[in-house]
Structure formats: C-alpha cells, structure tokens
Image 1 (cartoon, rainbow, N blue to C red):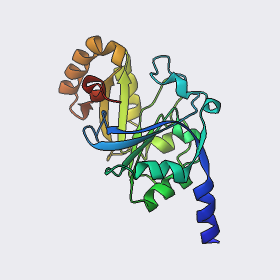
Image 2: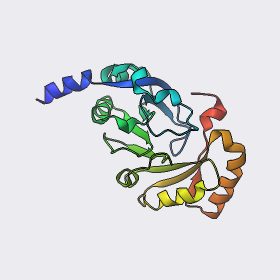
Image 3: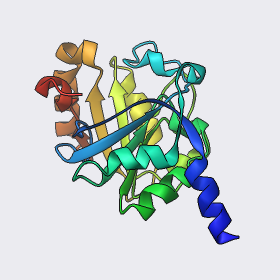
Image 4: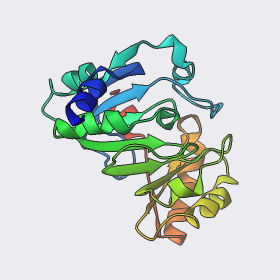
Length: 209
C-alpha cells in the first residue's frame, strides 16, 4: 500500500502559476537562496496584492508534483517556499512529502485563512483584513509578518501578535506602494516596541523576482 501511495503522490497535481529560483526577500529568511513555488487560487482579495493574476486557479496549468520537484532539483538550493495566491486552499500534504523526499526544507507563506496541511520547517503567516486567519494556524506560525498600509495597522498587528506562540518572530513590513510613508513609522514603532522587527521587500530593492 505504501508503494502505491507513493506512486499516486507522484501523479498528483496542483495549479502552478510560476516557479523560480531566487533570493528570499522578506522576513526571517531574507537573503537566503530559495526556490519559489507559487500556486494558483486565492479568495482573500487584498486590493494591494501584487500577484492578482494568481487568484483564479483555473487559469493556471495543473502540474504534477514530480515535475515541480524535478525543476527544484536543477538548482543547488534546497529551501523551497510554497506561496500563492493562498496555498492552503489546496491540500499540501503530498507536495511537502515529495519535497522532503528530495531533501528540501519546506517554507510556507500563507494568510492563515485555511486549515494547515503539509509538513513544514518554517511557517510565515501574513494575516489579511479581508479574510481572517484561523487561530489554529496563528499558534503554529514561526513568523508573523504584518503588512502595514496605514497607521491603524499597528493596533491590528498587536491583535494578531496576542494570538501567536511565544516562539513566533514578529515582523512589520511596509506595503510597497506606501513604503515612503510607512517605513519611518515602522522604524519608530519597533524602537518603542522591540519585540517587533522590521521586514523589507529587499527583492524589490535588488530588482530580482
């Protein structure tokens, strides 16, 4: 039975918007080589989302997990970020199992709006106002990354920080189009509230994917 399950997982497929090898630009793992798997499908609906083309899963081809992992193995890095869209709209159990079999570290980027599936080495929860995160996912987060669009987001960030575990690292990140206005406020806030750290979208400054 185990053998047939393994064969089945190799032929399982998920809607894939894009995949690419780059440098992680945000949060705790900033600066580390990482392979990104961006899945299609999202109903969270952030108006400032920079990958709105990911929202409709039907517009992206379903790619077999074996083919995704084969693409990962073409590169020397073994840190794999699964993102979206909202990746937890899909059952990620087989994807993470296949990645683990290939010797990969599995990193998740999620809004936390859906139940957690998969086996993860690092979970980054970036909650959105448009669809609330589940407390069960917040409690498992290694990293809470709150995007700051306006001043009211600081209080909103604290509401979610109160729901995560003691092990969770806390990050405030300016929304890109508002970075000039929000970054000075974030710097001041972190100086006054040092349990938080500043996260920047360094890949945009570096002009890489």
